[in-house]
Length: 66
Image 1: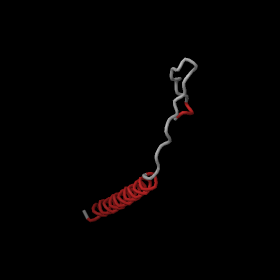
Image 2 (image 1 turned 180 degrees about the horizontal axis):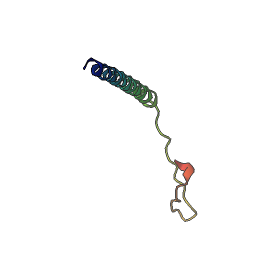
Image 3 (image 1 turned 180 degrees about the vertical axis):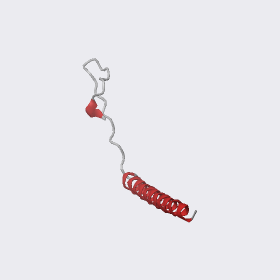
Image 4 (image 1 turned 30 degrees about the vertical axis):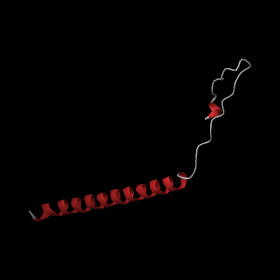
């Protein structure tokens, strides 16, 4: 029976290490997200410019308008 408990203990140790690594990764991800929100928070998107054709009708938007 004593030989049987060692693999279980090592499995627990490995699982605990995995959980700690997951937790560290989650903290880093949250920190990056917070920094990204803070840096992008002051920027405003550019306003779209609507162009009109000769008849005064608005033209369609192009890919470059976004």
